[in-house]
Length: 193
Image 1 (cartoon, rainbow, N blue to C red):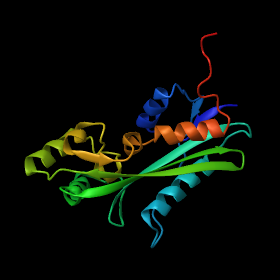
Image 2: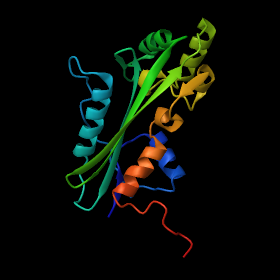
Image 3: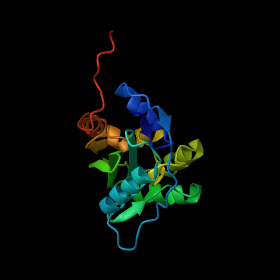
């Protein structure tokens, strides 16, 4: 049985390492992540994760782990900004407000799929022009849902969360561990021998 991470995210790889898990292979799927018309954010996140898991090529005995993280303000899905201008737009919309971060994680073995969604609340402080411009200048917003990453420089902009920190980063560890154990992955195997 091979364990395949269906993600190119270095953050997810680092989080898996906290569980003592090293993927046998990394195969980021290439799927269309465009929200469907009228699709609610949680449904969107779950669908994209499921499609990622189904898109990764694997052998019948392999385990494939995929996840998706979505930043949501009201019903607005904030994907990865195209450029610094869109990142600024996202950050200004989030400034001084609470928003949700939804992370869905899926584990597939053959035709069996286990999936869990985790919803966390995040408050971003009211950003001054200086803070906004300094953050944008770091480039840390690139490739990040909502234009920020809590584990990077933007952590200084987040005074409060309710939920799972690791889910906000990109992979809810408690839920991921449960899925792995449910699928029969030897998560806490004795490595002393």
